[in-house]
Amino acid sequence: MKQFVICFAALVNILPVIAVVLSQETQQLLLVSFDGFRWDYLDKVDTPNFDRMARRGVKAKYMTPAFPTLTLPAHHTIATGLYPESHGVVHNIMYDPDLNETITRETRNESKWWDTGPHPYGLQPGRKSATFNYYGGEVKIKNYTATYFVSEDPVNSSVTREEGVKAAIAWLTEGVAFVAVHFSEPDHVGHAYGPDSDEVKQQITNADETLGRLLDKIEASQLSNKVNIIVTSDHGMANIYRDKKVQLYDFINPDDVTYIVANYGPLAMILPREGRLEPVLQLLQNASVHMKVYRKENVPNRLHFSSNNRILPIIAMTEDPWEIFTVFDGTKLEAGGHGFDNDDVNMRTIFLAEGPSFKKNLIVDPFESVQLYELMCHVIGLNPAPNNGSLEVLRSMLLDSETNAAVLAGTANALAGFIACGLIWILH
Figure 1 (tube, rainbow, N blue to C red):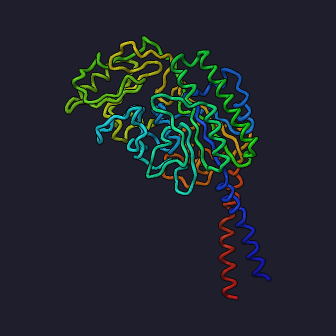
Figure 2: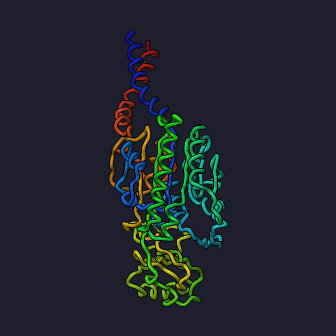
Figure 3: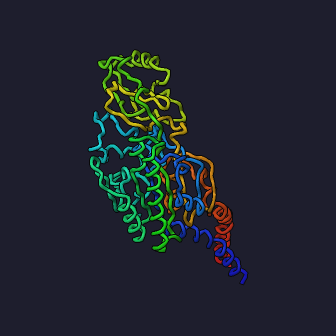
């Protein structure tokens, strides 16, 4: 009888551990990214559905995106938990010296541009995943691709917000563990009209309505008890101006350059011709008080932007609202832009989360987007690949943050009980 009591006590102790594991494996995650959604956009117009989500879940004061604050690298950091220097998608426009090739809108879905780091979350064997217009979602990475995907045409986009909502709900209803949906606004309108425009305000309203439809359909489909939702973005948006451009070819000779990434916002990367690195570097370092220029190995450590061959030897960065061109001919006229230092207040973006894994009506301190990967893996019970984040940074927003601590503290006792139980039966 005594042996039975000991074994029963050990079983009781281990059951909560089993329950936590099973709960995580049956939960689903919907990630929604509204491209170019600056952290303070929620204060510009009424957003009843964003507000509803904040009341029912967690909202960050803001989220700091990865540097560079550009769409492809920032989204892939969310997907992998890696800084761009680690996952290899270092810019929307990349030159790879090893391949001697440049990524374009037409070739950006080729695996060679994305396959330099570990595969993203949800793309692991045995787990169903789906992506809607999420950059890299349709690409084969480490021989895996999403179970389902809808891809935006790289030249002519025709996908709609309503199609995204419909696809997400269908996939979640089927039981897909991870669904990522990307909407291209308010980014496009932010570029065209600027972040303070009425056009952007309308897109914020549109985003709120889209979120409302998602929340309502999740409830109507009786998925609320197992679907977690994270709403975020890749970067913010700053006002930019025609007369605030640094023209690199005013200071350096184009013949001294093998390859240059410029004419794309406030970040430039330069590969000088052999023997011309130091002269080009010195000329650019004295070019403008609005531009900082580094050897790539001297880029500030906090930016994590040096240890990759696709990061070219010279890095130039302008302060908000200045941009870098080789020669500015006036044809690329935009009112809004991004790509600035991720410490820039205008580059901050949003984070909200709700669902069975998250606490309610909680405001959390700012954090970096590199932390999202571990959080998302935890929510759906995936073992994360090596990454630059840590679950401990965001654990406090999880409902199981206290429960799991107590459960795991009792695990050692439970296992010891089982061992003792076995020994008693053997020796009896």
